[in-house]
Structure formats: C-alpha cells, structure tokens
Image 1: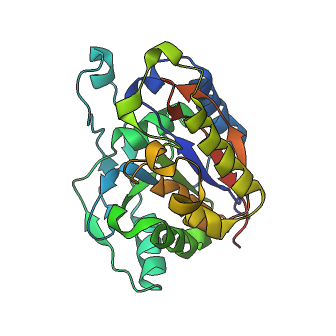
Image 2: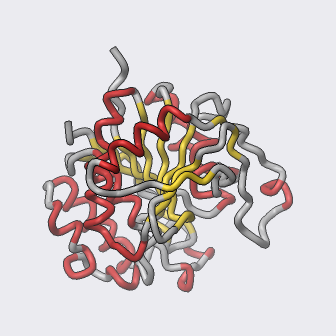
Length: 261
C-alpha cells in the first residue's frame, strides 16, 4: 500500500533561502526527512503563470535561474531531477474530468519557486517531479477546484506542493526588521491560520474581502494562489506547520492539508 501524503503549501521566499540557514531553511530541510520519500511530486509554483493549464513533460527538468542580482553561487546551483510521464498522464486525466485540457511543455524546467524548496526537502533529487502552471487571472475558487480534482493523486503516493508566499509585498521589504513583522503582516498571517484551523473554506476563498490587509499583503495574487490548490487537494482540513518572517514583510508560513479523500 502506498503512503498517503498530505498536500503542502510552503512559502519559498527569496532564492537565497537555499543559502541562508534561517528558520524556514531548516524547517524545509527537516520537512522532507519527516515526510519520507514520495513516489513523485506535483508542484505548483507562483512563478509559472499561463493562460491555460500547462504541465512539464521533459524526462529531465532543467534548473531555471529566473532571477537577477543575487550571489554568483545561486546561479551555479543545479537540481538535476527527472520528470514523470506517468504523473503527467494521471494529472491530465483528472483535470479533463472537470473540463480542463492541459498542454504539455516539453522544454520547461523548474523555476526557483519550485527547485529552491525541493532542493532543501529532497536534496538528492531522487524523486520525480512534475510542475503544473497557474492561471492567476482565474482566482482562488478556480485554483481550489483544480486542487480538488487532483486530490486522487495522493492515493498513488504523490506529494502535491503549492509553493508561493503567505504574504508577498516586495515594495515594502525591510531587511532591518527581518524577524519582526509589522502588524499588517502578522494580522493577515494570524487570520489565515485561524481560518484554516476553523475550516472556514469560503472565507479563505473570499480572503480579498474577509482577511485584514489582504490587498496590502498581496498587491497581486500569484504568490497566494498555490495555497488554494493545496487547500483543495486536502479538502480544507489542515494545520500550520511553520511560521517565521524574512525581510519584515514575507511570512514564511507552511501548511499541511490531510482531508479531501
């Protein structure tokens, strides 16, 4: 019998997360050990946005260094992971069941929103990975439904990860207050945690209207939408695994969701 893994949402932070030995870095390193090795991983990152659903189809996924102005050593990191044609077919079939057609991109690799957390969780790159794109223009409810459709993959030993950021306002970054968030960041993080704990799925989906300082924490939605995929996969039943802050305004929270089957 294959291991039933939870759905995860992780905050991937800046690309330097892989180099900085802070709380979120150590949490992700421990998380992979705690979970064990899945059959494969399906990851949805904030850094692949497309008009229609697309999925990586390459047998070997290249490491995309989709950032500028960071230390040279970051550009030298390679995460040489394999893809999974079997998982691609499974995901295609499940999304076809809700009327979505997935296009396969045989050239796309993993962006830093995917390979940074994965390289901490599974540093040996020995778990096949497939990345699914987001349709940011379609919002939380769509991504929640996308997650619900994919939930059956958990029964096949697949680990599904949404990788984004619980808060993401880069215009207000302040390295001087790295571990001490302003109230408008903490209030939002606390609200999400309470809503998850209480199972308030409709409030979470309507977070733009319900959560304090929602627009300030997410001027655009792409970094929060992977959360809703994981929420849908796990049926809304979840708990927070980690909470810390970087650069004052980036909440590095992580959640696991265990329901939905």
